[in-house]
Amino acid sequence: CKIEIVRSTRNGEEMIKIDLARTQAEQEKGLSGREALRENEGMLFIFPKSQRNYFWMKDMNFDLDIIWIDSGGEVMQIDKQVSANTYNSANPDSSLMYRSSHPIMYVMELESGVADKLGLSVNSKLSIVR
Image (cartoon, rainbow, N blue to C red; front, side, top):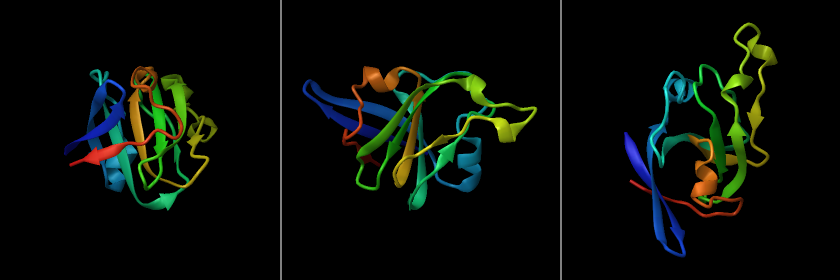
């Protein structure tokens, strides 16, 4: 299932086409194994309630920007240029984990650098269009 996320800018609106990860299985797989993303594409992880979450880069083939979003659509945190090489398959427990600093309901993953291209920053507001 795909949705669009809209960000209003001075020059109009920016649309991001997003694959949804709603179930636990979809969230565990995430973008693992994909070779790349097209420009303005990504994945949105939807959690059943606001909570602090963590992510790792298991089986990733490209770097990401991880955008942590609260239940009202406000960007609470952005981890930029998260390296695909931070997962240790020989010892997963030693892999680098990325954690939200606030309770969040959504996490959006975009190809590294796209958050800056879209002008996303902490306190940006996003609207989900189904």
